Length: 58
Image (tube, rainbow, N blue to C red; front, side, top):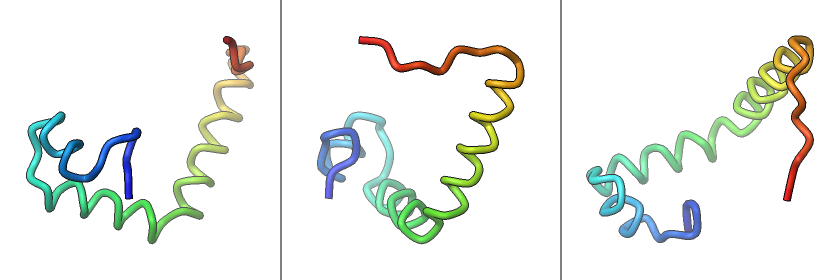
């Protein structure tokens, strides 16, 4: 598995975190995909209601 194009080991080294912390974060995301998606949708809606342009740019 990779995170931001890095292996778990590379991510741990890059952010100076224990490898187990990286694995815990990945496991949390894997087990809570619906919650994370719901929270992202809520935040997106709130930003749009404030007039923030969320269009992707090159």
